Image (cartoon, chains in turn orange, blue):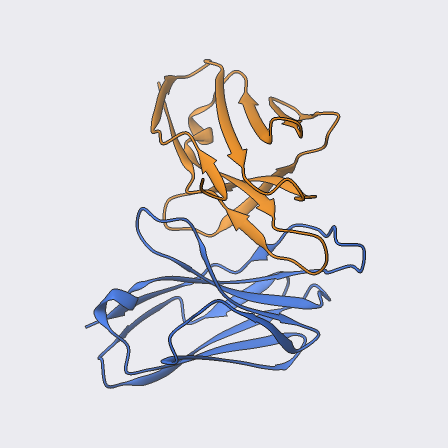
Length: 111
Length: 116
């Protein structure tokens, strides 16, 4: 099983649609979870952290299910500017550790 | 300057050249990283420096040589690269804590390297 696995994509949606991204991770000891956004030929940028209780930031909602080792990102009312690749990111283990990135899911929002 | 800055933004080099990538962070973080991003692959960790000490070397070929002279600067020295080393090289920094849970990374804008 890959360390961090995401929907392969791309997702093509019209403006205003709701889209959900799914991610699973293999290390049950992981402690930190994030969604990053990467625009074409740019560096990844933090979109939001993911907390066990779930968290929301405007049109974006992130959920974490530790029992299933599953993370999700929901985008409501999609905008053209949401077009990007969304990366699921998990830290590896206890102690100093590094972040492991999923391959990313591309989202294309069309008019 | 703020955040993480990387230079150069683009680099084309021959297989016999020697070049260096530079990264500087202005965030007061205590850890810095080099990642490689190739087309259709996830980001691959290359090196980690925590408090200027290399703590991880992810089986990277010796033609890549990192250097971290202080907590704000990180270099990646390149020599005798292969065409398959062409990729986007990203530097990142973060704040590591002792509790095992730490914050996210801040990335530089990357160096797009082409080896000819």
